[in-house]
Image 1 (spheres, rainbow, N blue to C red):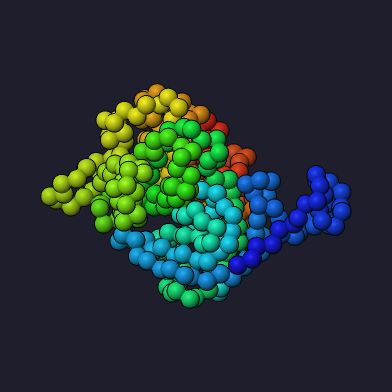
Image 2 (cartoon, rainbow, N blue to C red; image 1 turned 90 degrees about the vertical axis):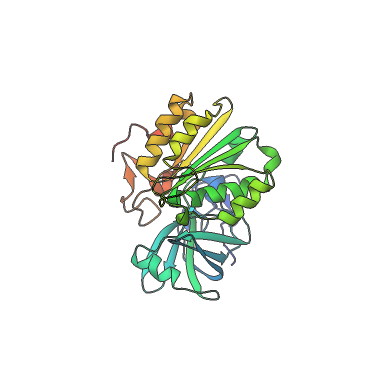
Length: 301
């Protein structure tokens, strides 16, 4: 899949020699957001499913062929013709493909998971701001995820695995209701065996007789007492879970500036036009979905 962008020949100028504002290209494909604060792919482009895999009891992995540049924490608008589109987080770090973890709860997602390898989906994006990985170089990283919130953090882990020498210890705390809901178990186990990352899992509602960690992931964070010095926490999951994690991190000595969250809102257009995802002047789709906690901690809605 070829992604078209407006090429720049000088500061504020396009390849046609327009001035700094360049109004004549206002509706063209735009520059990739990571570098310019803009959008890489404005119009839906067809792409092919190259892998389909069941993950746990509720989720399906769809891998599509896409030569795209994206950052961990960003999302694409995924379209199923005849049914609509939905924002889906990225669960990979590759220039050759994009992985989506889909929980089929709505019309679009249910139809998406009915697709098979070789079928076509439409993508536009990537949208939003992801985790600013360049700011975390030479830091320790603490990843805390709950349920399907582990999916975007898997994209972070893929990125870290590709750039492992640039970061210090990476510790992960992932929580689920029960073991059968766990996702990416094979990949995470391989990383742990190789000593690349460390993982702690907790299950809040396991079946009777379960021998692993029972309870909420915050209890195991408290027990581990991670050192907040030079450590950044990346948190993703349901809002109540994230708020509980942040409270625990603050008690452990983490400042709000050390905590980054991936915020979930009902996003529709992905460009800030419809206003569905606004949080007191900030748009989750355009200004997020990743925010440093102190930026939005006092926002309502």
